[in-house]
Image (cartoon, rainbow, N blue to C red; front, side, top):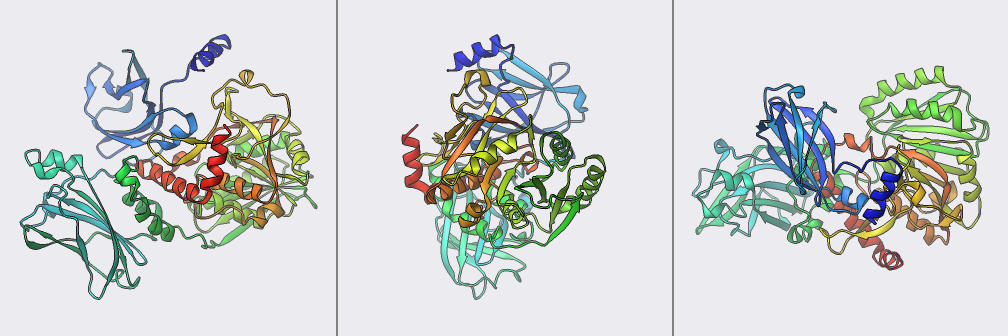
Amino acid sequence: MNKIKNVARRLLGKEAPKPYVIDSVAKTSTGYCVVGWYATSTVQRVGLISNENKPLASDVTFIERSDVVSATGKPATGFQLVCDTELDISEFQFIVLCTDGNQLKASLTLQGDIQPIDVPSIDVSKMSSSSVKGTLEYAIYVDEYVYVTGWLLDAGKTKSFDLNIKKAITKDTNLIRYTRSDVVNAFADSAESVNAGFILVFTLDSAELVPSVKQLSIEFEYADKLEKLSTTQIYNGKSDQMTNAQRMLNAWQAHSPSHLAKADMFIPMLDKMYPGDVKPSVRRLDFGNAAASPSVSMIVPLYGRIDFMRYQLSNFQRFINAETVEVIYVLDDPKLANEATKLAREMAQIVSFPFSLLILGKNVGFGKANNIGVEYARADNLLLLNSDILPKSMQWVEKLLETSNKPEVGIVGARLLFEDNTIQHDGMAPMTVNEYPGLLFNDHPKKGWPIQLAPYTENEEHCTLLTAACWMVKKSDFIAVGGFDPMYILGDFEDSDLCLKIEELGKRNMIRRDVELYHLERQSQNLVKPGRWKHNITVLNAIKYNDKWKSKLGDLEGKL
């Protein structure tokens, strides 16, 4: 199949895609941070090189990229390069050494203000003064759960730890021991540095004991002595969910079978940090004269890239009938409220298309933002759309509505294209990923294919799983199944979950391949802090999804 695609690209005048992607380039206090991924089968290593062809020393952290594997079906390696240098970004380049011996070079430009992943380092000043070397780096508490992490120079032999909080009774303890490269490097002459890292999650009998604690300690027995490690770095997991999720999950190596088996130790804490029943405040702004009786309510969540509202509204002016469609933007990024309001007022003067803006008082994530938008929808039919979707022709709404109006039909999706008219989405299907045995992820068959290689004979076809980047669905069906399930944190799998819930109603989900739209794909999600933690959340969401739909997914996979 790869040979066919390569031949097609040559015939169509398209170059083969690069074997790497740079997600972000940020300036740090001492240099630069470059985050991205590369095709494992094609690339041997990546680095930085000066314009005089002198290699620049970089600290490399490898990141699991299950999202890339899920999207492309091919092995991929994520990376973070942190380079301390006084050179200007114009004075060095990104270099890729391919497995065939070729070298690729690319100039870099700053993309956002993303800071490097927190890579643990040895701080001798915080080291225990006891007979065993070690540090308790920090703790995170969420209700009755306490997460602690650090390292202990004991070759991973200590298996029993106690949390030292007065009056607290520990009901359960989960432990992961693992090798940390920073500890190995700092104590290269010690055989005890292997498996020195530890992650602990304690479950207490009370949620009231931790918030007032100024110093938290763990106790353990070593060399027949009772030892103790303490920390004053104690974080409330609910106060800054994303940062604390990053602290909690960056060290978890989900691709390791022993680590993957311990996934359940993180899920209860994350569920408490991102409760599904949280209702943010909502402020509504209306622009223009809305349709009196719309037949379709379009819901578009906004996060990070609010400039997409500018491009979409300009596009809607050409390709949507304002008399039949109401457009509701849901700003799921409160810190951008003033900027979004200013842009909305500006666009109201430019386009004649009416629209509304819901400003949420708290970031709730993709699924919940859509659920809130649906509460304000006046039409009987919902059109859920990502902010990075751009229609390319007229009648696309009418065609989706035509199929959606059939009583036996549930969700209706469309064919989504990259800017070069290759396929981004043509329906989804369950797929296995070698790194995570026993789990099924969402695959996008035909992704990257030129549309000339994917002809169709019927405009409508049954397709159980469809991306929520573009959906038409009856409002009554959406409400009947409870909308998007809030158990999926920060997105991933809530769309395929709802697809399966709709078909459980006895409906059939359909794809309209004669409806084509451009999808810039995950442009707003790229603004979320990078690192292993985000991909680990995807894995945890996959575990929830598979637990809920195990038998159904097995049936779907067997039909491929």
